[in-house]
Length: 129
Length: 358
Image (cartoon, rainbow over all chains, first blue to last red; front, side, top):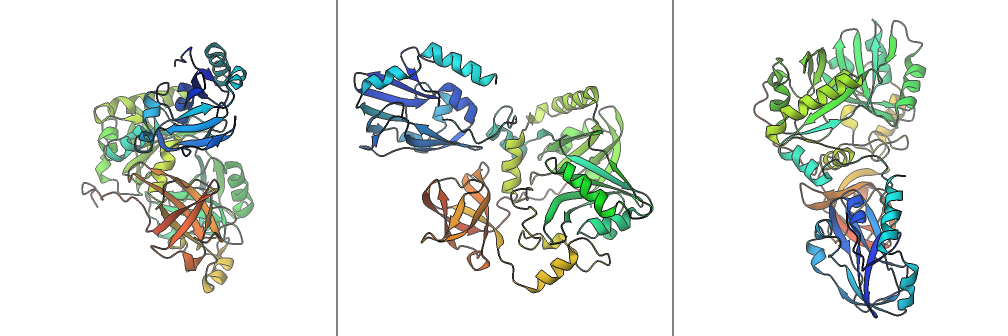
């Protein structure tokens, strides 16, 4: 499992890639691995305002449902509609399969998130619990 | 994401979908050694079984098994079981893992004082391995000289399997597919050796080890009840739609009979139905079922995507007047109502094999 160094991560296993106020959000390799075969993705509406840590949608595998939370506050500018018909893309390419794009309202919120090394360490601790 | 569904057991090996599909189209092997087994032995064993279980064991022949259940005096479920008649004086009851301690206590309390019957908890002495799927017979046949094609559905025999003598080989399962369940000595060396030999024998048919996740989706497609979901000590036999396994007309006075005779006269309060999602969304265990106007109707007992049917299916309890085929209700999926239709069960029914001799 790999975690790109340019992303930031949450302990709830989302990744966010930001360039100024433009951000892209997905779930991590670890998350897709835990969930198993993903069969359903629920996404927000374009224009929806999200606050940090609020649910933006959900991802479901055959065995479990998991909420996905916004890593930072902002408004939804794009959703990855292709996931509705091909949710398994997340299993294949979690790092590059984005769920939503956001315009961040406060990019400094990203400072509270984990960098790749810290996230990887967190995941290693979680998976050996 | 914080909640991954509360699963803390290894529920899949190579992946739930691949495991599920292997069982439907080829063969899968399940380690179900967590299942318990209780032996009743002695000249009084039939009388004890007839008192303990709702089905009519006097109809069983030696080498035959059937689905049955232990009931509370109220006619609700202590556990559902598969009863095997080993000989005229010897019966084997296969019970669920989660209810094992409760079950053995219940058995002792219910029939412990009956004459001429010994109760043995064999749960720790045997490893149960299930080989399931259309290629299960070909797989297992490589490891035994016993003619498996001669074993009919819900019958069993003994044979040498993978080097072990006197292995109970039953044509039973919990997947809705053809297959076998075998009972081997539970020591690690024997269990591991048999497991590996089965895996090797099934290799040409694409055998995979299958976990509890696939076991659940397979049994749900086949509409087989799971204790704690469709059945429990709060659900009676008729509500669960299992009346065909409950023989109120058998001579023996089994636990629960009086209550069920009384409730057989009355209309059931609720009925177990199959649901198929009409709207987008997956019904999950314990989600509320409502009318389209939002009035509470019942609850989902098991719900999942169906890998075979490529639909989202569920079982749920509904009031009888809502339980009619094609009725449309709503499942509350985390705050949102999604339409679902009452459909016939089982959701999946395999084509019966013609190779089985009768």
